[in-house]
Length: 307
View 1 (cartoon, rainbow, N blue to C red):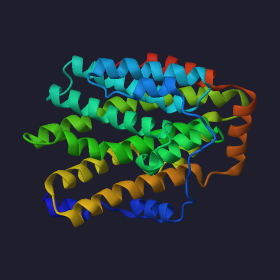
View 2 (view 1 turned 60 degrees about the horizontal axis):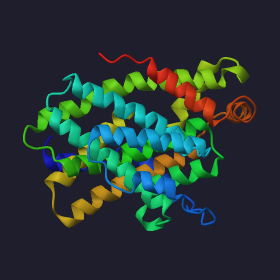
View 3 (view 1 turned 120 degrees about the vertical axis):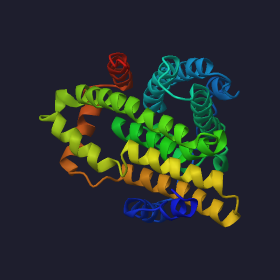
């Protein structure tokens, strides 16, 4: 696709809706009453330098958050499973350019680490707004587990991924790298299926026809499918790589930030049947705790077999 055509396709009707929602959002502020947790800071203070090191420290961070009863552990459980799956796929030769995929996955992980560190150290302006919403909501603990999961996915894919692509570069052999980028969609699809099974297990004790209810929730809470979001990330990444004209770079960054923020606002205010929302909330209050959610996610991810 020619570069200027790529610039022109950065917006579609759903992203225009996200921009509209972002413009109408309430300001998100950090909870200044919380003290910085130095143990958490220590785990994310230094950049990840290898995939195995990143995976180990992400796992340790997840367990520490779980012990703190901190709902940031929900997304991190999903993300550690994704990182593990991609690392295994690299080792099995699933990608055409394994070294590029290692750099890509490691750089992606460091974007999460940077956002987490800035949030934990109360450096408000250094926290991208999609992450400010995701982390702030998780710390407040007043959303559904499913919303905590989607907020983290939204921030990492709809915001961080295009910047990752810009940083690691896409040349030479751009088409080969795009194919590797798209190949991750197949891995994620298997993990998303496991995630939905875990959520069904969590909510099933309190909701009849749980698959129908979660299907409606899933369709409503997410503006973009993972594949669509990752394709958009590639397009924005291409613009950031190919154009070094400030107005175009600024436009691409604005699209990135605003659509990811709008996506977060949408997740927190889905047009879902309120009876379904109330039922999910009731189950969370009465049927399980954070540890149960993490255990079920871990067990379901453990059953995924990657070819």
